[in-house]
Length: 160
Image (cartoon, rainbow, N blue to C red; front, side, top):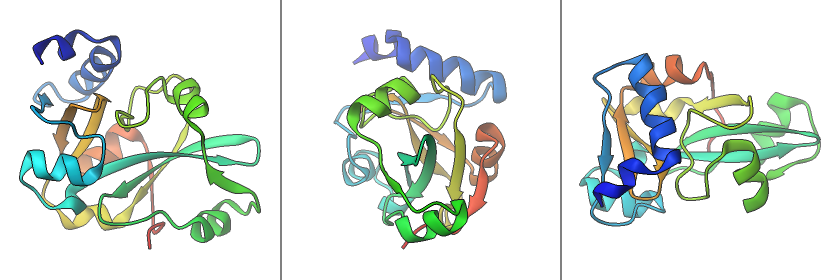
């Protein structure tokens, strides 16, 4: 498991979060955290405290939505906010190309492309939240306010 910290994607996240706050640490989980439920079970926390980093295609552009693990991203709310008719989940190839991560390990930071980021306000219910760190078995713990700052994300009500 320690070799996970040597993976390029995990190193990229590690360097990004350390520049922001040297106290932020990547946690290597003994069990897979590919889903929010898996991560919550591994961390012994509420599912809502898990940050899902989801890539959406909005006509010809892409954006990341950070959603609480116990919520779903509302396509209708996204369409209204973006004023676009055609908004959908990105496919696995689009996720890899735009974020540099594979599905299950998409971090909210250190993306391959410059992406707008929307953060669902429901994440602020928790003192700490956990986000993927470049691999399905790696996460980092962060406060909601820090997540907003580190991602330069826009706080929105985008969940249902």
